[in-house]
Image (tube, rainbow, N blue to C red; front, side):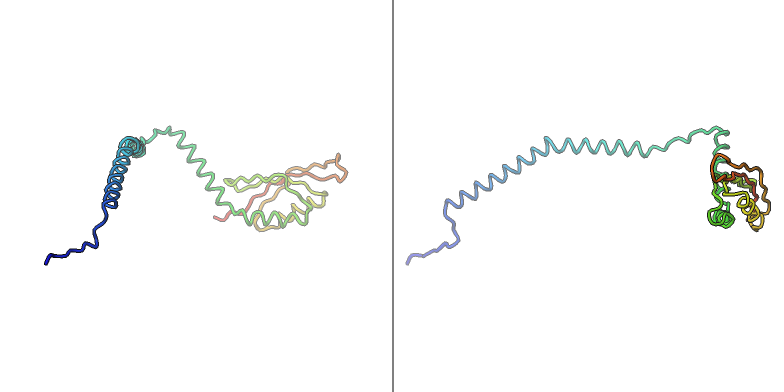
Amino acid sequence: MKEFYFDLIALPRSVRRTRAVMLLAGVLALAAVLAYWQAVQRPELVRQRQQVQTQMARLSDVPQAASRDPKDLMQAWQRAYGASVQLGVPWQSFFVQLGNASKAGEVAFISIEPDSKKGYVVLVAEARSLDSMLQFVSDLQASADFPQVALQSHAINKDVPEKPVRFRVTAKWKSTE
């Protein structure tokens, strides 16, 4: 008897040809993508890499220490020292004492000029009346934070109907050192 062979897996020729054509199309597409990358993308990547290397080289160069003029260094040091002295002033208690002495809106400050090196402050203020001004000066004199207070000048503004008094006071504040 003759052998009988069943090939249940065998595909028709049309399917095998379709697979072969699809495989060939995939290989051609891969070749096209590789050609595109070689022609367009690779030069762009090389250019970007060169830019990064140039920037890294520029950033890695250690800058030369600039030669400084001793006068410039001295001025910079003096400014830094002045700032550190200003930071050492007890500003919070200073303003609290001024606020306590000014009492309920009777005195308005026009300028406050501290001299932290000498420990003095020059106040220019305006009071509603001479009595308010004198009360403010006496309150500052009574304050423990201001051991020396002096009224330097005052002027009554007669052009304004309320006739306010503008005055200048110098006060030495107690140092915390």
